[in-house]
Length: 139
Image (spheres, rainbow, N blue to C red):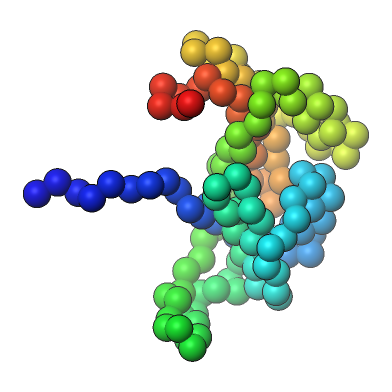
């Protein structure tokens, strides 16, 4: 029996030590606008996906809501995520990071033509701006 198809990755989660500091970075530096936020998380729409920024330890216990339960979860360590951008926007993103004092930690020119620009958030998570041409399945 074959597996049913998976349509995509809906959410990516990172866990941070200081949620207000993380929100200042993701909203002030990256310009993301939360579609939901409370004391334990901020949810940002990113294309067809959602970037969830959780307060480390704030979701370790199961939560019961009127619609059911959300099992406890948490994470530690420095996570990697990539945000897809247009190739023409790469210089503007590099300039914006620099203007906010965020160091460009690395850059990679991929064989298929895409470019990755790497940076760190305040918790040490490795962010990446990725232009088309990295993976063979990209449109």
